[in-house]
Image (cartoon, rainbow, N blue to C red; front, side):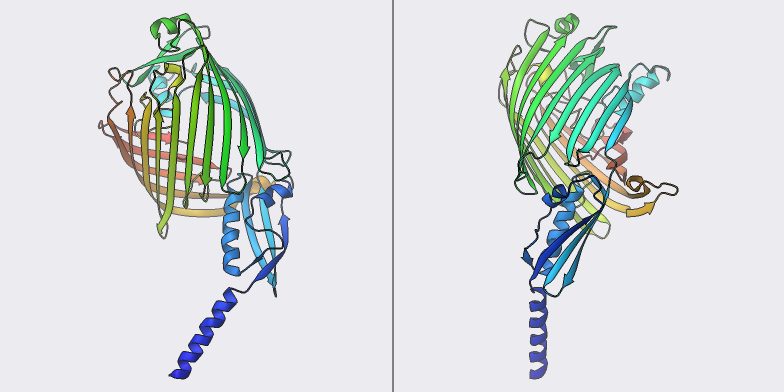
Length: 461
């Protein structure tokens, strides 16, 4: 018995020592980066040449590095292998690049979401196509092979938009500081100017009823791979028709038909999700502090916005996700055009038809997902371009439950959903494929007893 114990102890120690054996990373080889500069890929790695590590630690770092590269949205596929030679290890990174230049033709619906547009289209006996936009949208990702982003939009129609955006993630030698420049102009023939009964009230004319201009410049800082900081200076200006000013004197809250203000904000993000477009593991933390400064419109309140997300695997094919977001504002009247709560970017699922105005809100989203088909790779026949030939898809069914609450101290008599608990629940079928494309078909019921099918193309969290 004593010999057995000694043998077992010796075997355990040898295994432990072997797992802790140190290896030096002597080479990092990158394959498949025809456009992407090598330094952009190396920037996302959590290991470097010359580093000493053991196998267990190296595998953890490879996993983190793959997630970092995946969240750049530059590659369709990423594979990282380690090859050991005695006390040395070579890392081989194989990537399949995406297609980066997208001159999109624009033909889109000029509404907040598909369901709202479909209701109006149905009321016109399926004959009114006027609420559409057309034009061209150039998106050049990985510009110059340095993960820079160039966007130019020329959109005419019911809601015109002219946009220029240039994002440079790094311009210093250490690749820690970047800059973003953004400018856009909106011109609308149909503009909403008030919210009554949780519905947007519009004014429409043959001429333009509102013109909105936004200009912003941001300074980016990212020292490691998971933490980001941003300082942003913005300017907003809105010009409206006389009728809008007469119908809602609080739209700009001045006696003019033009109003503007400045905003200075600081943002921090801690990104620990495995895949930002449709995460299944990890967590995310984001908060923003903003101070508005009055221009020709008296917008001078302070805002704080915070969001946290958590995702985890419960068991085989079963996942859970949860998020919580809140916004608080300082006291002071906020003109209509400068406030936004739920109904646009943020919403409680099953309340897509409503807009709930307010100065403060919180929003909780939860879902349990089951993978009907986990990520499945396949090749498209007769397609020879490497950027499109190899594809993947996954399919999930989920049960969701959302809650939210908007605090409105200005117009709560006109909108019953403000200052009341919002609850929505239902089921969803989510299809995820390459190029970060997502289709969600949801069926749900809200606290009002309303049921419906809703179509979305983005991550609900």
